[in-house]
Image 1 (spheres, rainbow, N blue to C red):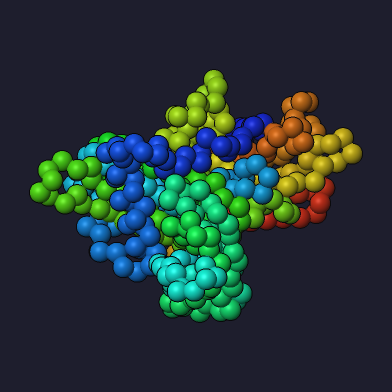
Image 2: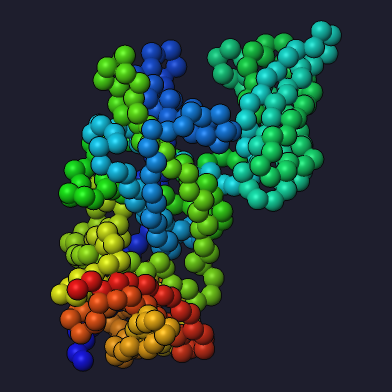
Length: 410
């Protein structure tokens, strides 16, 4: 049995930076809202209604697929794909997504001035807790503003306890200047860590395949609710635009401590680029990492006449006295049978050390260990398999394991 093993790329500079944080465009004061701004406001309101449980059912739902790659500091870069059944929406759509930490969220509030000389107002409203645990001592920041939106002062308030999945009322008294005409309430830790609004034409899928839209976000480790909305752009005012929705709970792992690996990309194609993408292109092609363009496989079912191609990154390895890592990656294939899982075969291990790495390789300079395989499947009988990837840091004496299930189709 013969295997062809691709040479793993060993140096990669990648950092997800500010170009990914594309906010909804702010409206200039006094200017009438544009059509795009109106659509953006409608989408953000729709997501708020989803969070608070008062939204109308969507016309279609989306499915989700995501990966985790280390970014700058402790942040994690999360490229993702949403899939939509063909012909559910028109081709021209607005897309909005928001990444919100799980926990207490503001449902609504109102402010009422009290009839006295102390300029006291009562701010009341409701919170809803989207996490699975009780949150205690939830802090609110109440801001008073004048008619032009200028802040006139802030005051803190605390809600003692907010139970999961329930609406919890709150009331706070604030001393408001006489010129106060507006109020805002911010729940500590409830702001979205990422949001994006774009306008696009949905791609034409292959026959029998769903429409696929790729995007990405950056977030620190934690538990989040990701809301993705696709909404048809208005054409006939007599016909309400259709909406597709996805709410996905995503746990972003901590990739910055101890020996770790990124998500394993099962790829249809991996191509090197001569230079990184421009900012405006990167957000539309989020599976391009540095100078490496990855086209994720649309399925883990692979023809027997094809190849299994994977790629992933190894993080937080120790270094030897020469400031080089010493990492071995083993690839073990197991076949699932009626009697249970059985070892099938393995490829030669990959070695990343002072003898195999380029002299200029330096983890401190942002270079990364990139593992990968491209294995012809002609010798694999049709059926279900599991690829076990064992990454061993020989300097630190640690090992981590990742698994990739796949199916060989005759």
